[in-house]
Image (cartoon, rainbow, N blue to C red):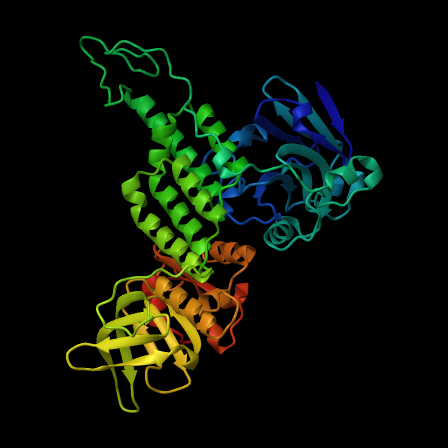
Length: 541
């Protein structure tokens, strides 16, 4: 089937072909020196990765999803291999020698292996001094691929195109770079409607299914291709029964699966359509699901850490967030031993949430309390005593009761108690809390606490109970709650690494200007720090 595109017209590829392997080709008589290029753009029409600018000096993308064939003036495109972050392919022609007004009747085509094709005609009379021309755009919209004929020229040549692709393009999701007459495509109104499809909860997601196994081969033959050796040239097989060529192809397939996995979780959130794409990748590459997940084990653990960091940033966790965390761990088949540290943090986070809701536990303590006084927490702690001339640490333990806080110093240091009515503010730190009191004694930082989140949550609940306030989170962490979209934007901007040392373990959201000094929970005032760098920064600007 051959279809003719008009300028600005759109077609869904489903109506043209079911094959993901396509060819982009251009015939430009009168412009024999023109160079062809393809830009792989993200959802915002930006070239965020130079490896997806395919031209005569860079003939293929990393996973070979876009490859240039210079002799035929064409590009081979495999839509199934494209990373999820690539939403739009822009097919362009550029020239340095003559403007596109010299072009005679040219054609840009998109075709599949069977010969089904879409053609878009361009003529020189449409242009004047333009030295760059956008021919076609192939783009993803609401989960489906479409193609549109553009035919837009640029006087600045390739440089103008590069500036356009690298800058902000304010446009509707469905509109191509050229704004054609809406009458040319009657589905314009419908195309602007956002996707309202239902996304099921993680509990309803199906685990990845392995590709159907190949028929069992002879023990002395390759289990994939069936190749056999000879008496004089025996075939070497690996532990999985694969020959060297098949083992190499299997590793390349696992590498492509990892590329798509990293693209799926680049924003710190795994969505259902991304999980379905991973399933299609497993089937297309003929992979074993367990082997594929084992191959991305380190990346999967980082995704789990990010999931917990997003929940941990406001000091509370909902029941649904906890369920989603456990379901994601189940889908990713993470061994319990590797998940244990994150599970421990999750337990603490859930306990802190329960405490802030008013469910204070009663514990046995080593100190003698007054009648009717109940201990809720006892933890080792170190108080930083600061004077005008020096600062020193006093090692001891903190006992939190329903009436007051006791700090018992060791080695003859003595101790003190703090009434809840004297507490003005509680600031949670990475390794303890900072108390601002209405009196000098006991005011300062209590650090080297094993569970600072539990300590801050317990103090928060008891202070608000004492002051007859509602049981709502009011510690420094809780009062600076960060919206989910801000968390994701900061994570993407900082690339999931500490901005100081580039570590990607035990990350925390930090206010550049501390919240206690008036800093806001905005994208420009937030950064990712590892726990060590956050401790060193403390509340400094």
